[in-house]
Length: 425
Image 1: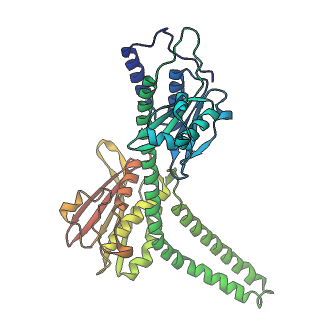
Image 2: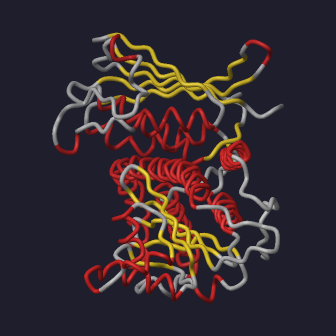
Image 3: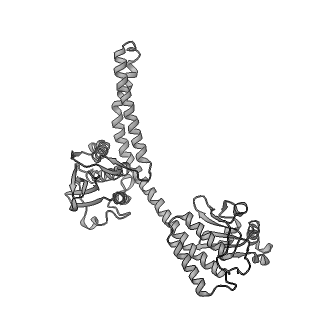
């Protein structure tokens, strides 16, 4: 792009005009939610303020321990300015130490006694830069802007460092907010994945139980085939059985892989009863080993629902496993019932109730069970609660525009009620 200053007064703008410029810039950034779009806007505005030929914005990449070039302005920036700079590169190190705008005028004071500054100025010169602007927040250099040579046109003035510093601080706040939002989104994704992986131990038990019969038929066929190779009826019939069993194992493996791999929600038209039955099957082995009886009542008229199959599996498995944890000391009954629910206004929902006969939840804890990191499990080792499972359950249901409620009585048990909006008839 060709950079031309927007400021055409022969004199430097008044303080009111400078304030208007910064306020307008802040409003623009406040409406942006995409980091790339924001970075482009930042470097263009700062370059315009400095009437420079080119510029680039570098952002801290903590995972790779470097600063990445996330935006450029001017046609020659890509040939002069590298893609990344290490965190210990002279430029960011000097900016972090001084927390002020570097200019070419700093070279007058640089000497062998200030070797880091001399190296930073040498790097600055190689990029044909006139200013390096730090974006520092809470003691961290989260980004910096490199501004190229000054090229004011006739009748236009180069605006001072005070305006550039004001624009830079505004940009810093906006960058930090978006980076924080992206970090939170990334952390939440990791929490969902971690919670999902915790359930795989139970799924693995169900998987081992499920494939035992298919493996037996396959093994039997392999053992008998040599002596029955001349029996076409045996080969034909048993081959079909074995092939069906292989397909069955493949489907199970794919289910587990899909469950473990977090993806963005993929809403599909689903039979909710089918998902409930699948999850109950996977917990059957664990329930039986703890003396827990499973009772299910799946409504034949349950409406279909648009949902992410793997995410709803995560919800159901979480609730089923929590119910079993409440009964594992002395056994009990897990009752699962689905039904069609018509609410006020004629809206139709697919509804499920998950009831256990466990120890129950104290009333003081009920209002906090969906809070992050709140847990009533304080045992050590594998049974220690993270306090994230029900938080993730709640968010997934919210993202599906559904509802989740709970009631509990100490010594009697707990019931979770989950409703999801049904597809129109």
